[in-house]
Length: 125
Image (cartoon, rainbow, N blue to C red; front, side, top):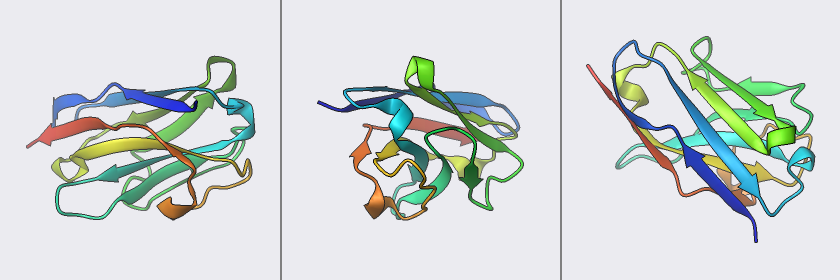
C-alpha cells in the first residue's frame, strides 16, 4: 500500500533552519505531484508548497515565500521542504501529501489522495 513517511521535524529557535523529508513507497513517485501542508492546534490544515511530478513547477503560500523551498528527487522517491528563517508562527504539524494528477500544484487538501502521518515543527521565540 501507499506510505508517506515524514521526518526532520523538531524544536528550533526563531531564525533557524530545518529540512523536512517525505519518503514515499507503494506508488509511482515520478508520476504524482507532491505537496506539504501544515496544521496548528485549533486551526485548519494549511497549504505550504507543492511541486509537480517532473519537479519543474512549484508553488508556495505567500506566508512562506522566500523562506521555504520544496524540491524532490524522483530517484529517491523523496520530497523535501527546506525551511529557513523560521518564525514562531510556523509552529505546526507538517504533512506531506500526494496527488495522482502529475501536473497539479493545487492548494486544496481535499484533492490529495495520500497523506503521511505528520512531523512536528516547533519554533520558539
